[in-house]
Length: 132
Image (cartoon, rainbow, N blue to C red; front, side, top):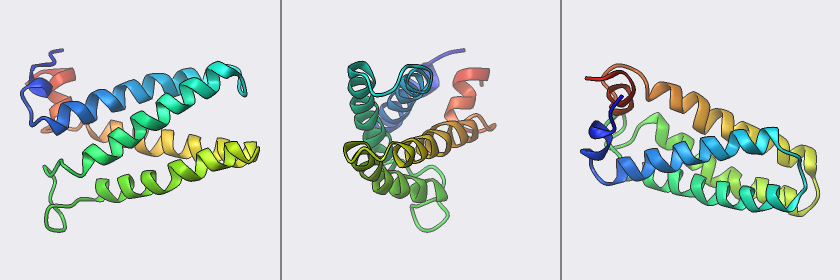
């Protein structure tokens, strides 16, 4: 395992990857920890900011080009940018079940599933984890 391929990439890629890794770690903590507490809310806000960074930075990454400079991953970023404020609003409105559903959907889709795709051969994270 070496961070060299990631650190040698265009600046948006390490920003995107490190924000995603931090969001994944905090997301696991959020799923396991007690809900409705001050730590949950604090970590939740940090997670939201990290997810905004993940989604926003993706628009500067164009390694997979399906529609001009865009790929299906960019659709996921749009979905994330739309649903994150919705999930925050659900929490603010005390719609706990809706908040949980939205945030778990974002975590699962934008971090777990999309993260697994970054491990495919030829991708930078594959080189980081498995070597060149």
